[in-house]
Every structure is written in structure tokens, then in C-alpha cells.
Length: 80
View 1 (cartoon, rainbow, N blue to C red):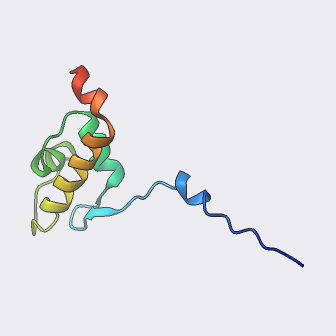
View 2: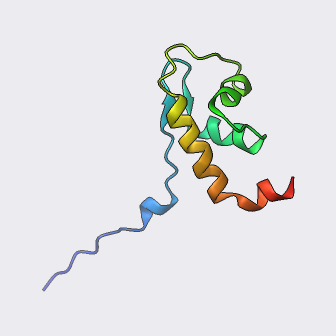
């Protein structure tokens, strides 16, 4: 009997680089970098990236990503 092994753990190391703002090509890495530098809102992320809102549809998504980043990095925020 042959048994195939299914790798379910290789995805854990994969970092999702989702595009949050199509207009300005702002992805997860850029949002996280702005958050690490102290961005607290989508407007702060746009400024950190040197861009402005065009359609504004990304605002809610960026704010959700910022909240997720803060939840994953509470010690960094508390140290300031």
C-alpha cells in the first residue's frame, strides 16, 4: 500500500502580499512597514507611501490591516 504525504505546513511560512490599494499599488508589506513606523490610519499609510486617496475604496481594508498588525505586534506599540 502506497501512501502520499500531503504537505499542509509549507503555507505557514508564506507571507501574503495582498494589494490593499489598487490605485497606488499599496500592498500588505507597505501597510505593515507604515504601521511599524507609527501609521495609525489609512490616511497615515497613504502619506507614508507618498500617495493620496483616489477612489478611497481601500480605506476600510487598510484600517483592518493596521488593526491586525497592531494585534500581532502589541509589544512594539507598548514600547513607544
